[in-house]
Image (cartoon, rainbow, N blue to C red; front, top):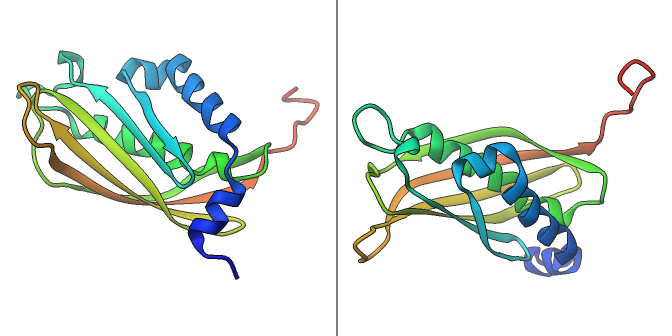
Length: 160
């Protein structure tokens, strides 16, 4: 039986990964966040979001929903290049641990597949804050997510 890294290398489609990076730039919600895919390789995705006022809560900190939205997005983006074209990757569960507040700088999220089966995938995501003034990145959130890989719903006459 091949190792996970061998399985991921064999199943990875860089054309799908590139298309997803482009779709992320163009899609309404990820572009609203300012999410940019920075690096992709088998079983791994890194993205960035430059912190802006629109990301902050009333107390001047980045809203936890911003971190969760970034994590949920790359949770599926890391899996799609490994599944058959036409399959859907849907989040089954997502556990977020918020570890430190974020005020400014940049969020950097890294997702890594830790298990991938025919219908279920598991992904670990770490989110770091890179200060605007420079310095070391700080781990601000850690997440674990599970995705369900399924056939796309059949179109009916009623839905087109």
